[in-house]
Image 1: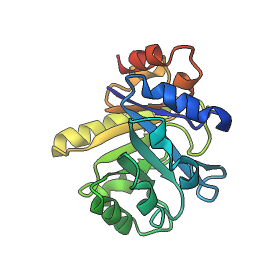
Image 2: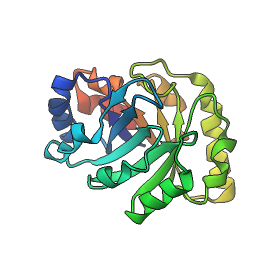
Image 3: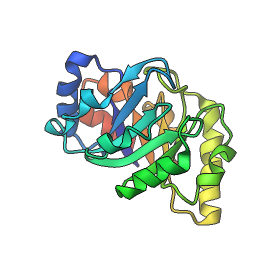
Image 4: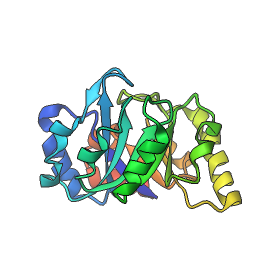
Length: 211
């Protein structure tokens, strides 16, 4: 199991220090939630805020765009050390254009499925993407409680991937902690924020999430 740590819940004045400390751990990716204040209410991690993130971490970035129009933003974020860029299906840009642009940079592409969405929402794009992000909270707010009703959806997607022999990663994001991670063995990547950054020992918590 790989772990991608979000720092969305960390106060702005502490973010650089927390990212620096996370860089010293065995986390696999740093999860960057980008919010435009339109797709979701809040704003977070716009490029001007994180363009120097490479000074604080060498970990690859797992970028989650919660924005209506990511197409015009991709060029900037592609300058960073990016593992994957993930987008929501119900945005205002054409998704195929968004996917094309990411792939032109050699960056993996993910699509997010919100808790209320059926997996069929991503079906038209499965041949074009590398990752499916199952949201286990409503997008946009840190510290929410895990929505256990998404667990069957994760299992359904794993079954589909095996049956169709697809090379797709499953990532799960939202409210993940040391208790509910036991139900998420069908995932490839766990995205965890508060569980790690509010702990007294980042590395110990990450290793427990991995295990």
